[in-house]
Amino acid sequence: MSKLRATIAEYDAAKAERVPAETLRTMSDATEQLRSMGVADRSLKTGDRVPDFVLNNHLGEPRQVRHLLADSVVVLNFYRGGWCPYCNMELGALQQALPQIRAAGATLVAISPELPDRAMDTQARHALEFDVLSDVGNRVSGAFGLAFELPEQLRPIYTRLGIDIPAFNGDDRFTLPVPATYVVDGDGIIRYHFVNVDYTQRLEPDELLRHLRGH
Image (cartoon, rainbow, N blue to C red; front, side):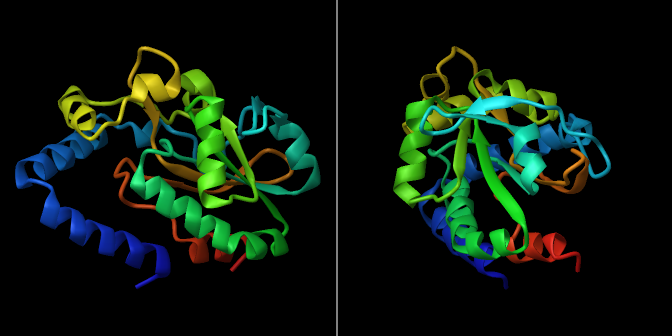
């Protein structure tokens, strides 16, 4: 089993021991609801052109995708927020793979809808050496077709877990991006995409590297 998947599998096993079965069923049912709604089907895919956008990083510095693409291939990683354990595991794995990602000629950028101070917290917690961009209002994730409203049945569960999405995102909505990873070439064309409404499933960095290296 690959490294990130092994970490996630270990976490899932512990979660199954401590989280009530009814809660786990509600989470699983919500995922299937999103799948049946075709959320991932409407997202940008390999061969599509990405929209140009400007977002501030965790230091408040603007980053424009067109400028990033002028220098290298860009890997865009959309994550739900620093409150999400699966996102944290993925970000940590990407940080470990960062030297190899750069050696393959790519720039890595992470994007979430959280407020800038939350993005800074996430960057500091994992000592991330790549930009963490704040997509307040899910404007960019919406342009990629990734934005969705958290199903109603999950909201009280999140509240019990201390996850206040409107507060984290700075609005009164429960909008999140479907976790996704895109490899975008210098012409702004998506050369590889990974989009999965099951937020427990993430792209293994080794697989990302294979695509970056053209294998």
